[in-house]
Length: 115
Image 1 (cartoon, rainbow, N blue to C red):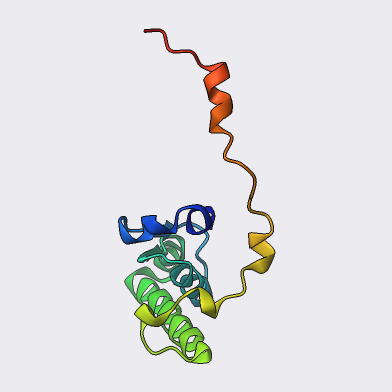
Image 2 (image 1 turned 180 degrees about the vertical axis):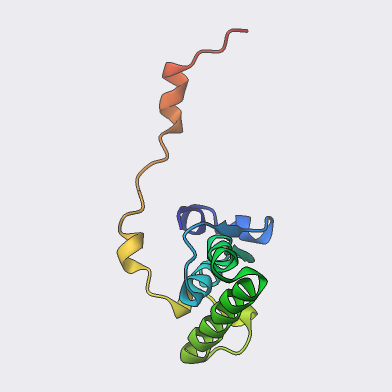
């Protein structure tokens, strides 16, 4: 979220992948709304593998897919490309983002080149 606020031009130059903390289809949708092009869901399929082998993995991915599709329908969105910041309420999280000066100028006093 800090990147989106302080240098949004980056999103046009690099791919943003989100991995970690994704448990449900709604988490996938949130990550996509924040600008991710790819979302990793490694833990849930591993649990499915442990519980039911290949069929367990297939079932987990089916559940994630269904949850994601349901969340998108509830938002009135048909395509992943249509998801954006307008579909989430991030105010509570945005309040925690530092909004002061970058502070890199202070490094000039602390770090002196040795050349």
